[in-house]
Structure formats: structure tokens, C-alpha cells
Image (tube, rainbow, N blue to C red; front, side):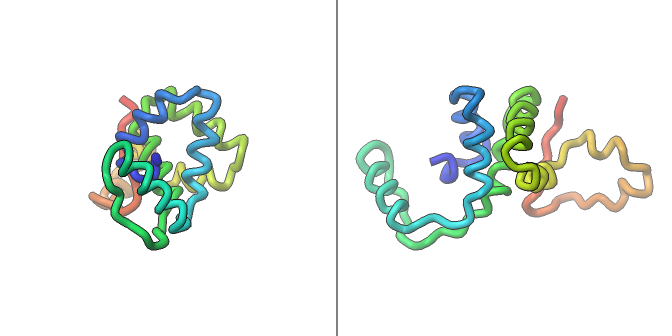
Length: 132
């Protein structure tokens, strides 16, 4: 269900889950690339009964790494760090892909003036957050 919420909502739900399960949940999100239409149908039926209608019946293409990065940028630094540490234990490669999608303002501090002028104002699929 976290896949169908925006990043901020997913982060809020993730905060409510036990800390030890968070890395595994984010790893599962990061590894999603498509969704079986039968599962979407079951989810649709369940949500119709409980909340609202989710309009779709075809295979949905999903960039799980992008979604995982987006969710993590909405968490506090402590939670984000703990989840990234857990992800690194599960799969270093996927964890690195997530980190690459996350761009924090502290990254700008290590750039010299010449490099900063080359930083684009907006990069699709890269989620910026401040650790302040």
C-alpha cells in the first residue's frame, strides 16, 4: 500500500512501524518494478470496501528505488540513517542506488564554486532534502 501513497504519507506510515522492520520494508519497495494486475484488483476491492476506489487493472510500472528514496527524504535524519544502515546490510547495491537518488544540501557543501554552478535546479527522479 505504501507504493500508492505519496512520499510524505509513506514516510509517516513507515515511522509507525517497528524500527527493526523498516529496512526490509524499504528494500521491498526498492525492488518493485511491476505489479501483478490480480494483486492490484485485490487491493482495489479491499480499498473499495474500506476507503476509496483505486482505478487501475493493468500492470503498473513502478520505480521502487525512486519511491524508496522519496520516502526516506521525508523521514528525520535518525530514522533515515537507521534504515539506510539496515538496507546496506541487506543489499549494498540497492542501498547505493537509493542513496544516489537522494540528494541532500550537505552534498553541495563539498562542491567547489565551479562545480556548484553546474548543479541543475531540478533533476527528475532525485529527491532533495535538508538534514537541518
